[in-house]
Length: 333
Image (tube, rainbow, N blue to C red; front, side):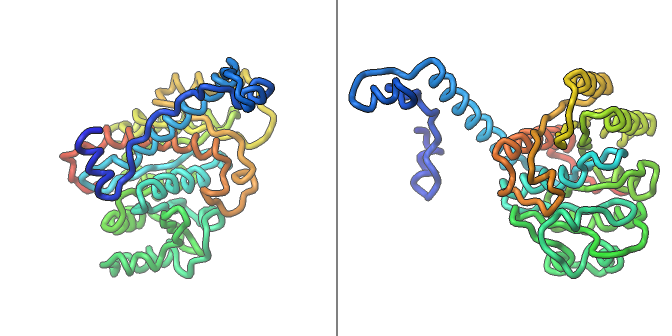
């Protein structure tokens, strides 16, 4: 054990994890029964393969969590979640991606609704806050402390803070998006933006102007992927910072339970790859997401959480590339 690891143990930290070794004796089936009475029976090939797969999954999980936990920047950073096609999972992706970040990093993550009109974020998040995005837009010039800003949020069990619409509000403008973002960035390290379906709107353009990484949720459906590709084309055509977002785009493919064609799956992956999407992350079907109710990380299937953690780690790595340690510029529209 090196000095750093030793000091961690001496001063309250955990001992470094060691890879799980394959047991010397079988533990399952008939071979396990024989081993249990003292016979020197080794694990079967199937049991050995299963144990190896479990160990590899645990190693990947630990690696992804380390990437998410240890990343740092010299300013607040932001993630834009968008696909112009409605019903592709923008809100669940925003909540779960932001929730994974907050749960691993211990908070300092705001998930904010930047759609033109009120969306579903308030319904899918935990809690029933009295104040939300509409009131924050109204009061934004007077927010000077973290305590004030906290009053417009819905705290989540993941330790994320959600800022969504609690009722009817005025149509969001790009100027309001930038103003709210600047205030959030004073008190939160990471901002996740759940956006709407109008990429030509003022609100969306405002969100683009204060974004560092683009995450595109897609389904295995033609309209879902074609509208995502059109979004990327429009961002590239705009040049500058929007084009940089397109170049760094990451896709998350969700499964909503409808029958799917393997041919369509392969074509969706090909189209996204040809459109320059950096990576495509698969999220398995999960009843908790499909139920369209309030989302909590603890209610997800472990495989779903691991898949979102892998996607989140990719987003964090991309953020580290996009935001250099020397970057201290506050992005404004």
